[in-house]
Length: 138
Image 1: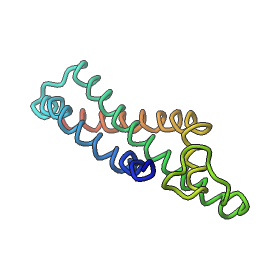
Image 2 (image 1 turned 120 degrees about the horizontal axis):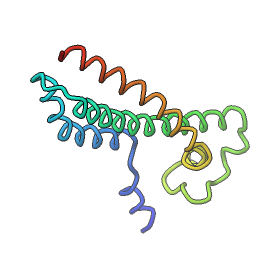
Image 3 (image 1 turned 180 degrees about the vertical axis):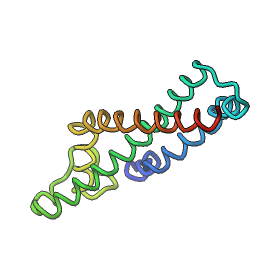
């Protein structure tokens, strides 16, 4: 019974990104309308930047966890084939052991590096997007 319920809670990064996009489409339209109408203030630009930063950071963290999981699974499969059969301590209900081990590593020991690296990328992406919007609106 527990394994049949586990599929309900399995959420892919693409689903999380889709929900995030829907949220920011709803809340970002007000800031976008002020940019297009020419009412650009410093506060409006800062709010727009912070919304974009949060959006880009969340998406990049989801993508980073997915990338690190895939890289860890492939690396273990290629370079340490004897670890492919070892089960993960808590994650492996629906996943193969090599994937659940890689996901566990990505969400524990590698998660801080993923978050920090994606924060740097998100700041650059949000700055570029905000500056392009300011250029086109003013």
